[in-house]
Length: 629
Image (spheres, rainbow, N blue to C red):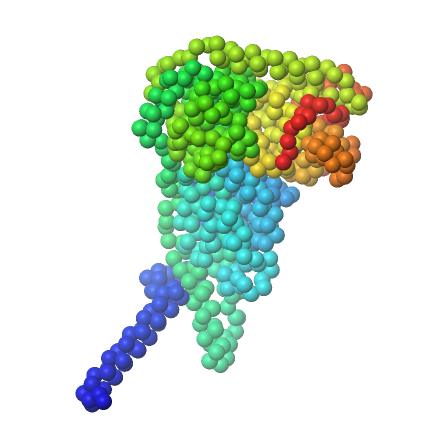
């Protein structure tokens, strides 16, 4: 049995432990309730400022010029604040268009494109565009409204678990819980979007974080003090939540950009690649979209590629880097060229379906691959191909260092001439196909050849569709770097209107030409109301063959049915006219006036009108054997 002295020593120790635990719990609760922060900082109950102003200030400090949106009550304060600070607010007819427009701004400017949408269905409507930006590695910021912090998971209007929805799609996701956290959260999000492998980021902004104190107080705290102990406890809790939302809200904070983390190749890696390339007899360069990312300007990259002197294929945002008809730019027969090359430099290109998962590469070739993303860089390297050197780093910076290391080395001209001759032969077959009759309407190959001849030097090309657009990729050349916008590897239909909107706002003096398939145009038609309202003149050319031809081209011979592939020769030009745009029709009846009709549309666009040219086309065998899955 224990002695009385032992018992006397136990009870004080136990009491001390209980008191210590209680004090720690109280301190923890006080910290979670923000009581300590409230002791050191003030709540300005008289201020009419609101969180939307903090959002707008950060965007302006980061050089954001446009905010794309579809309005909703959850986000009204930030829209009004952006307008007051001179950020142009452009509202669209569907949230997905707003995000596609932000994506285009990001790609063309090298900054972060920004879209803001309301809670619940407003955000779910953006999922396809956010995923497309993730796959295309576009740095964009999506701002989403949300129910008030106290009403989360309590059945509020349009309240869902938005964070779980966007975490798989975005590099960075955050829900702002206090007004003072808006600025640092947005700064971190903007930096994350551009660092490493660029991509979309998402910031959730609940109602009570965006609206001013007096409005939130009216909604959150009862107007008359409740009676009873429980009522007073609840009232104190709500008052404390309100104070914690706004305490320190308007204290000065840095708003500008944070440093970016951009990976760079090591000097040892560059030197090994210099040695491999210096021994090549038939080198080949494949440039992908990553090559056009900041910090290296496009003109500096172009000069480096010309100095390097290696024949190249350009894909994604790298299309147009060398302008039109450059002797180093090889456009056709890529698979055959890859089989013949002894050294292949994949600079931002990925061995996914576009390169047959790497099977198109010769086992005899030495492959150098450079990419910011390690997973993309090594994709399928365990199965179909093996890199001689895999370099994780910024693509354009690597190319510049490579050129510097090679010190003006040149290669025998016969290799490039062999590739150019193959190009000329392929293009001759295109010219022959353009002269072949089609069963009805116009030959799409001929139409696109005339588009190529008519397209001005200051044009931007936005492409959105299947068969018609894939044909255009062979025939129509962008006139310079960052002048071609396609969805990217995700193959999304419906990007056209949003991409055109972003492109025209970024480059108001350029002509934006959109090449649509008739199926894809269905997604974008209503946005001609947006173009008209905001006075944004773009020109849309619709290859109208009354069907989802890229699908039916395989489905009919393989499965014997055209089910779900048929559309109608719809009067899209008249539908656009109903929205206030200008509409033109091209068909066999005015075949001899094709160039004139294109020029008429071009002039109307220059006069400030959005234009739709509905081009009725037939079907050819130009893309027989192509894949759609």
